[in-house]
Image (cartoon, rainbow, N blue to C red; front, side, top):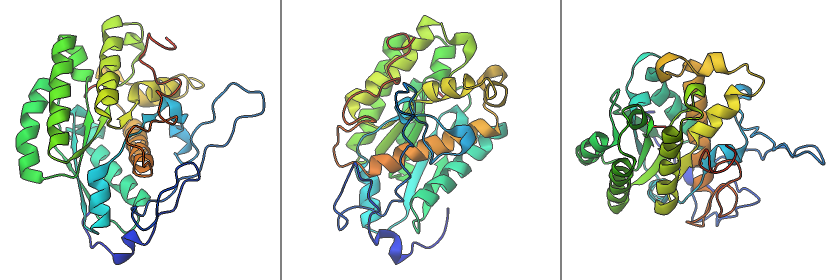
Length: 295
C-alpha cells in the first residue's frame, strides 16, 4: 500500500527456530507461529495455524520455498517493495478484483513498516505464451522486485500442447530471473470435475517441475484447494464455482497462501530449501504421481 517506509522496517529479524539467519543481514519479517503437532500416533499432518481458520492447509500441501533475493535487497535498502500480479485471477473481474488488494494487505502484515505496492496486470483467458510476451513490456514499465504468476489453468482449458506450455513458462521464468527479479508461481486451481483428467494433472505437474528446476517458490493452489474442498465438504460451495471462478473466500485464502510462501521464503537462507528442508514436500507431488492451474 502507498505510504512512507519507516526506519524500523529493518530493525531485526524475528527468527524461525528451524531457519536461523543473521539479524544484521536479514529483513524484518514477522515470524509466523509454528504448526501445532498432530496428536501422538496420528498420521494426520497439522494445519498451519497462522492462516485464517477457513484457509488452513498443511504446509506440505501449500508451498515449496526458495530464495527471494530481490525482495531481500529491497528490504535491506529500506525502500518500498514493488510487486506485479499476473494471471486471470488478477484480471479484476468479480471477486478477483479484491485479490491484489488482499495480497498487498497480507504482505504488509507479514512485513511490518514496509511499503508494498502490488500492481495487477492480469488478463482474463490469457495463456502463458501471450503472458510471457506481455510481461517483458510490463516489467520494463513497472520495474518490479517480485512477480506473482498464477499460471496454467487457462492453458489447460485451451488444451495447449504441454511441451509448448512448458517451454514458454520456462523461458519467461528464466528471463525474469535474469533481470534480478524474484518470481513466485501459483499452479492451476483444483476442480472436482477435472480431478481425474490426465492432461490437467500433467499441466499441474509441469508447473511444479519448472518451479523446482528454476528454484522459485511455488504455491500449490491445486493441492490447497483440493484439501479445503474435501475437508468436511463445507468449502466446496464457497471456493469452487462454475467456470473455475473463486469466491471472495477463495481469493482471500489465496492471498494468505501466497503471503505465507513469500514470508517463509524470505526466512530461508538455502537457495534450494523447500517446504520440507530441501525435498519435495509430502502431499505436494504432482497429482497422479503421488496421492492420486493457470491462470
